[in-house]
Length: 408
Image (cartoon, rainbow, N blue to C red; front, side, top):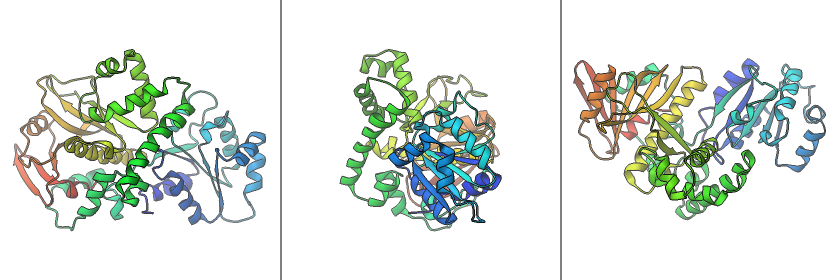
């Protein structure tokens, strides 16, 4: 298994600061593998899963008695205790808080889950100040080459330099075809990939959704999931979905929220500050598994979106700033696919074109409105890089293999 970029951050920012580590992310993205790798490095501690009957029984009787049995405190090194899917336990926040407060000097705690753990942190005993949250994303182009993400200021500087390094088109093409989830990517088999996707959909709806809700309309939510791939990379119309599914607007909105919590899809919203006649409400939808898409243009845009999304998450969760991913669009339907903001201030505009290497006039227009010093246009054309200076601003058209080399 390739080393994940979060490995070092979990230890350096979490355990070394005496914090519990909460690691969430999509089902089958590699959370358990990463956790067990950390345990192997530590060479002291234990891994348990709430779905294991014996652990469930021991925890229900007494979490403290369980932990005292599985951890050898005679060792000088601090043991690592990993608990998977603990959010399924009743009163898990209260019990975990008690364990942490008692053992924080003696034990490092890590909790993983395939649903957003912040959903389960609401109400009850507060864990505030006791943990740091991290999110494991699918493989990215740079991660598969063993590269560490650049800090934000370095990214902008690197983009201005004509790249001379060797790229890896095999990794790029595999990612586009099979997505970034470890198992289908590493198997590299189209039949396995199709079966894996089907199985993942069923588990999201029949298992994960059941854990966070009591919804009876599971078959309708499966229908919703089948409709979403055709609506990615474009404005999301809840009204259109409502009509197709014959349910209320509020119901579709609620179902979409669940699918976001379960890491099936995510939304990015328009940025309007300083944009003339900007849209202010309609989001765009993207999938965590871009390999579900069949349209080449939509898939390529989703592919770039996921790398930018992961980059923002990494910068935020490792203390490098407060970044978010938005898009730009005005009422004349002029659009730039992505805008990264830092503290709600424009940082980098990114336009995505499948084959068009001609610099986008819309990108120039929005960059001038937002006073951006640098903007980029990412294309699928291999080996391409061209820089333009317009109104004392830098515009770069470059291949995805160059741009993604710098992303998380």
